[in-house]
Amino acid sequence: MNLKIKTVIFLMAFSSLSLSAQDGEAKVGMKAGLNLSNLIADNINDQNMRIGFTGGLFFKSPVSDHVSIQPEILITGKGTTAMYDNFFSGDGEFTHRFDYLELPVMAVLNFYENINIHFGPYFAYMLDASVENISENSDYNYVERMNANDFQRMDYGFAGGLGFEFEAIGFGMRYSYGMNEVGKEQGDTGLFPDQSEEVSDAFKDLRNSAFAFYLSFGF
Image 1 (cartoon, helix red, strand yellow):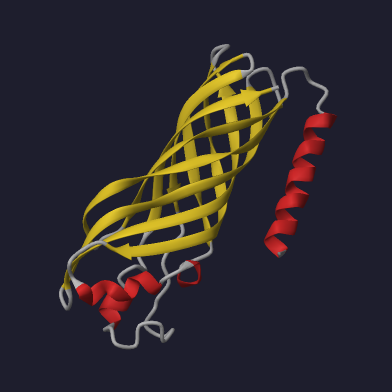
Image 2: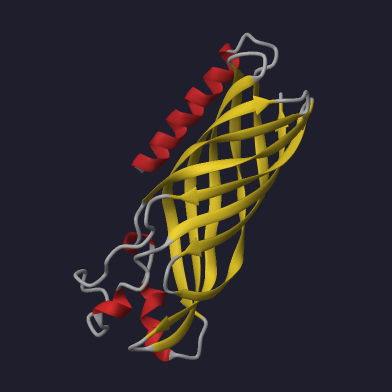
């Protein structure tokens, strides 16, 4: 409930910014697209990108002729399908699904009328998470009991990309890299009492990495 209240307050503040903007180039709008995401970790042998949705609202406020600040509020799906190699339990293949409420704050530099580069930090809160064992190794069936409480709720990192804007319509691409480890140490939680510490902590050293491709509509 607290998350819902905070989200509503943020959206109200976001809308008030658009109403108070006096510069004709200021924009409020919507964006949506696809995330192609991976997890970065030392103990992953091979992985396939997860294709997820990304979308939400943005507000673009110019601070000079060529520079704008663009905060956004997005729902973003991340994760991957990864092959792990553990000395004690052998190979395992898992599909990770993470859904975030993400707040990027981009500095937008317009070098040409319709082309920009943008970069800045992002902050995210994990809304949901699941892990599925898709290998034939039943030693890893315990991972299917994992949920968002078994991962770090907060994530943060940096993002940057290239955008193209033509009046109300825009499109672009962006790469984001997470600086916070996604996983928690599971050895002391009691969640996996029958697993060795090496197995239960296999998900600790994970960081988000994602390419996003989006369309936007601003007014």
